[in-house]
Length: 164
Image (cartoon, rainbow, N blue to C red; front, side, top):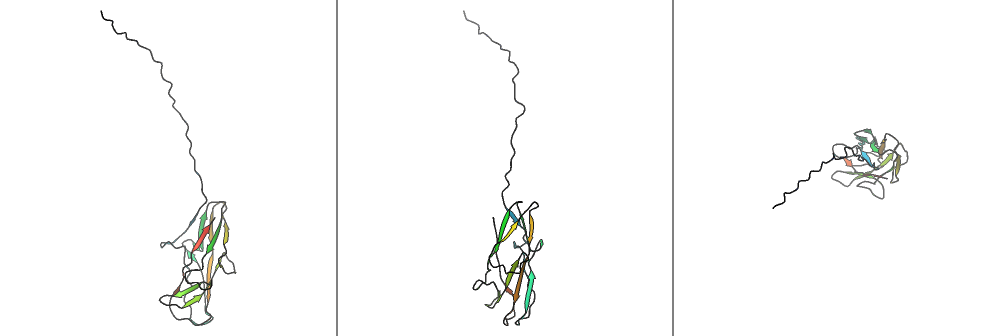
C-alpha cells in the first residue's frame, strides 16, 4: 500500500514590505573661477591705436573684453585670487615690448592693473570675491616712444595667470 503524499497548506500572513526609504543628495562646492573670453579664447585686447613714429608719441589704452573695460573674473564667493601677468613674448631685460610684424623693431610699453599708477611688473594683484563673486579688473597699457620707430603693426602677447 502506498502512502498518499501529505499536502500541507500553511496560510501565509501578508509580508511587511518597506514602502519608503531615505536617500542622501549632496554636492561639494570647489574653489574656482571663470573668465569671460572672446571667440578666439582671448581674455581681451588692448589697442594702442595709431601713433606717429616720432619720439614723444604716446599710445595709451585700456583692455577691452567681452564684459567691458577689463578682465571679467567670476570666482567662488569667499575666495581670494592672485592675478599675475608675464612679461610677454618680446620682453628684453624684464621690460615688455611690442615687436613689429615681419621685423625686429620693438617699442617698450607698460601695463597697469586695477587703477594703479605703478607699472604691473610681475607682482600679483590680489582680488577678493564676496557674495556675487564677479569682479572686473581694469588693465591699461601705455607706450611712449623714446626714439623714432619704423612704420608697421607692433604686437605682443601677455599671459594672465590666476592662482588661489
